[in-house]
Length: 474
Ligand code: GLN
Image (cartoon, rainbow, N blue to C red; front, side):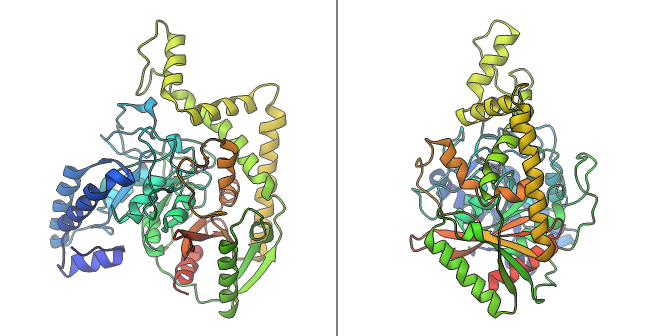
């Protein structure tokens, strides 16, 4: 059967009766059963349920009552609640846990007749940049099986790149949508903080976390954002700002002002081919009437440390609820409550999660609170202000998404600080709250895809997506 790589194609084929939802789901299921064992993107496939749902939606299509995303088949990162399905955040500590409710994003997508085909592998509690911190084992990069897919939404990016589903949901706290999207050659968007409800997303760091789409093209990302964005009474931080028609790409023709951060482009850690491709894109943009200027952002070195102090602090608090009593896994070797807490957490959390809980507890502790946590909050404000200052004069900030292409499995796992530096170009948008997208425009001579990132003003997703779509075709 023909593979459809965009919702537009799928929608047209369904409308011309060239195919059915049932045939589309069967096709994805057969690709999954052929290749998932190798890639390890899905941790659970909802085969029966997806087939049943497909039949219902085929009927709705023929009755003319189908929702706006009828026929779209998606995978969901395993840290987003799907009612009556297991949910583990790739952690042993949630072993056996089932969600009693749908996340708001899931409710909204189901209301538009999306078909959910399964749960996707990720780093444990979304902590990681390689999808190697998972109780289900590593995910492999579909472009080269010896390489990582990126993380933490590695399963989501690998699934879309492997054609296991049309689109996927991921979550992005410091780059977890954009970096795996870049490593796997697909599009990934982190919306403005508060644009999308976090209700039903397992909290890692609540003032950073955002859910967003991973897709084959910008249009599909826009269509999903249109549905999942908006005020939600279940998430008091969600914004009541009006949701725009993100898929109406209408402002791309006007000439834009784009800032390129000197410290990123001239960074010694940046792969020279990536730098060259970004420079070529800059030239292309200039030739097409856009203004591109180099600007300085002197806080590049502060981004990663600030991010890790604040997110581990929030994580140490958020993860306190996993205590061996309320959810999932409980150690069998205990004789009192204190021991139940300690042993369940020691046995249930992986090494990286334990490291972050300890680091977060340390930076919040009485003697160090001021020196680390308060200081990092102050630096976060400086970073926010400096980012807004650039965006006063420019429409977008352009950087590479990652300093290099996907690395070898196991390569960076030994030293956490080396792994943390992977996030150098992506964490800015989470610290400042701005929307940012990764666009898979390039292929390296080593055969791997890579991407550029565009960051826009708060709530200017419409402009960001329009321009991204234009740039993908330039
Ligand atoms: N790699 C980053 C981290 O390990 C980002 C994670 C994320 O965005 N969820 O924290």
